[in-house]
Amino acid sequence: MAKSSGSRQTRRTPACAESAVNRFMQAKAGASAEPLFASHEKVVLSAADWTAFHDALIDPPEPNAMLRKAARRYRERFGG
Image (cartoon, rainbow, N blue to C red; front, top):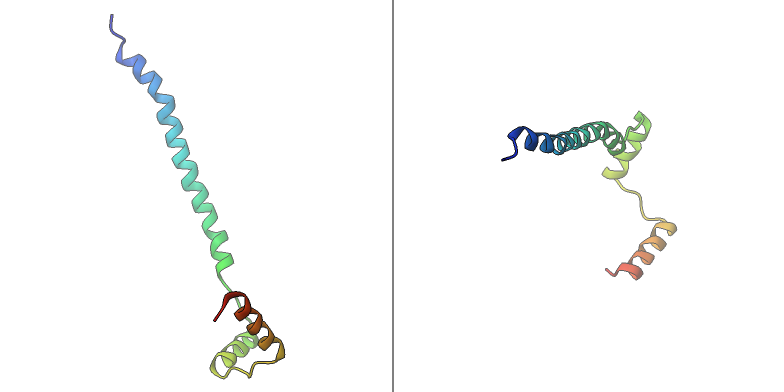
């Protein structure tokens, strides 16, 4: 006697349910992680910090001794 389609469906149901739960959990985890990632990608500056940043981009100061030393170490390690 052939197995009924009901018993085959009963065996498949847990696998389908597990797959659906996995997809649901992945979607929820991804959605929950988005705000965390976004908060780490933003930089919020005060008005004074923004002005200093802007001014440094527009008219950068001359390199000081520490910056020249760091540049020299970088070239030694990575070339260039």
